[in-house]
Amino acid sequence: MEKLDLTEAEWRERLTPERYHVLREAGTEPAFAGDLYNNHEAGDYLCAGCGLTLFESKTKYDSGSGWPSFTQPASEDAVTDHQDTSHGMVRTESRCARCGGHLGHVFPDGPPPTGLRYCINSLALEFEPAGER
Image (cartoon, rainbow, N blue to C red; front, side):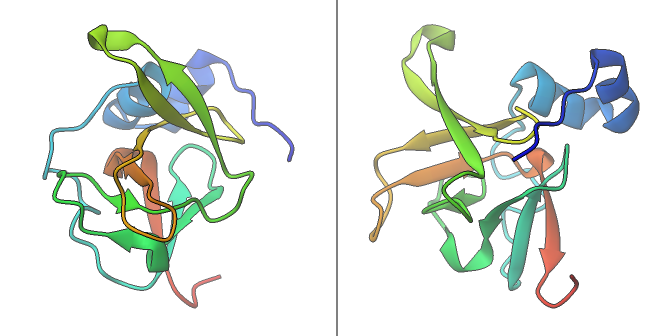
């Protein structure tokens, strides 16, 4: 996959200030505040920074965490995981494989079949309803 490498000035021009904070500065939106938390439509969840398909609605579930949650990425190469030791914790950060944008974190407390919970910021995603490609 070809990487998208923009300058910080180009990212600021491309993204809203809120999306820039999440995607480029590893920010987090408040729990239960994101537009996609209660979305139950069929479709794909794309990176708001570069448009890469990251997650599919068939893997989305209500984790009760306050953020959209998924059991797995849309493909093995869509999301990369990185150790995050910020805020005095050790967590696994999830980033877009194409643009490196911060998406959220993945935890080992999800349902079958993967046992994973990809806890993702709505601001890091765009939703594309099924059949629109």
